[in-house]
Length: 154
Image 1 (cartoon, rainbow, N blue to C red):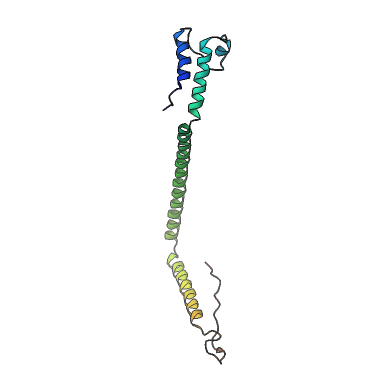
Image 2: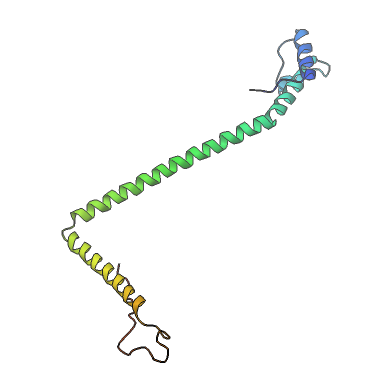
């Protein structure tokens, strides 16, 4: 929706059309430049251009263009995210198929589970070992050693 024209612009355009001198050329065009300075169509073309400028830079038009640009970028971002998620899903399905086709997948899974259980047990033993100061007047037992976790091979 365009803004309503100012009364001044309407008066200039009406004067040009009432004079029945022909169509109003676009402001700045060769036809407009060829008009004599007193021709009412010259002022009408100027008024139309000024009104278009005023409408284009009105707060309402700026907000509409900004909303359209943000919406377009948002739609583009969503399309990109759908593509990313599709690619990730395909990758996961491919990996899952590869693992399912591996002959020794159960053995690998058991090894991974055993390593996980070993790490959990080491952490449990470290948490339960006596610390310096647990028994005032006595040093920690030489039988207790703090287990150091091995690097995770996976």
